[in-house]
Length: 425
Image (cartoon, rainbow, N blue to C red; front, top):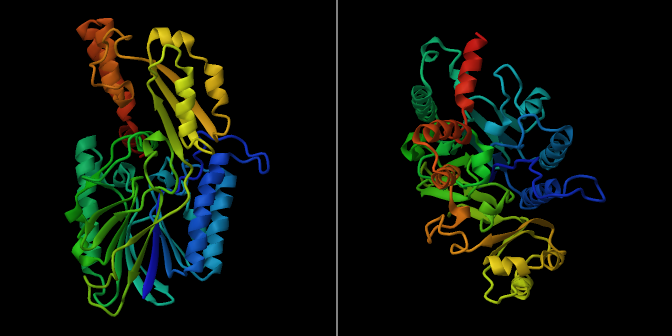
């Protein structure tokens, strides 16, 4: 039996809602991410597993600090010292800004560390484990600049280029899958966006800027693999079961959009003696790790003086050691009587107080929003259109501003990359 641990999207370096730890001087949020990573490494060693498969995005930044690199390497070393092979797939956050620069994971390949396999380019690897060999077709994140080195792609628009990338990725998977040894277990490992998958609003929107290709499940040729290990999306999800197509999600919550999401990794068992399509033993098992709680205290006081009701709502909520936000929906009269100092004092046990927001009720806002719409539910462009409506902006001015806003919100990273790569030729 070959036991595989599949995780992804570690994103070391996210320090939002953190503070300096008095003992180490490091951000408490960095320590949160490392705590979850340590839990995973401890499990891999104690279980033990035969392979750890990392689906990409080791760091938040494309140029991680020396501290972040050190902490990642320490935990990688622990697994290697325990005789566990590790596959590191390169994700979009692991890629440099220019093609000629090194990826964040390339150093491990350069050092030639035994049992560490870095997939920075599309390839097929055969990885020996203590219980048999595994074939892994590895598809790291693909950017337009890598295609623009070829003459046939240089004059394409962004939409054309994205379709060409999707076609190219599909052809790569098909060609490599058909060359696999049918007598050996096979896994497809890919850092990709999948059409129809659950995308976490908030953290994923600002951590993935620009436009990128999205693949269909059929493009992955899942029938030729025993398991499809994905990375990129932060919500743990199984897209298909025969064979499993799985996103393990990120290891820690990043913002309040992930408040209700469990965090962890998947564990699977493969029986190499079985024929293809029947090798997976049972279903992949999701194993949760500790994740810093995010807690929203949402209260709509009824009393003229709202403070007591707000304090009672805070007392009922699990705010201790959590990252907390408080939303108080009240009238103008209640707002004048709210004692914010007492509210903040009641949150002293929270790990971090994101904010206390006193939000006027719909009636108090003179009907600027439809009665069934909450401000925090609005996407940026929707909120901007409502703002322009309120200001009664001239139509021509409105369209110009909306056009620029769409560019800023959606990002033009891919087009800038195209221009930069073309200009460097």
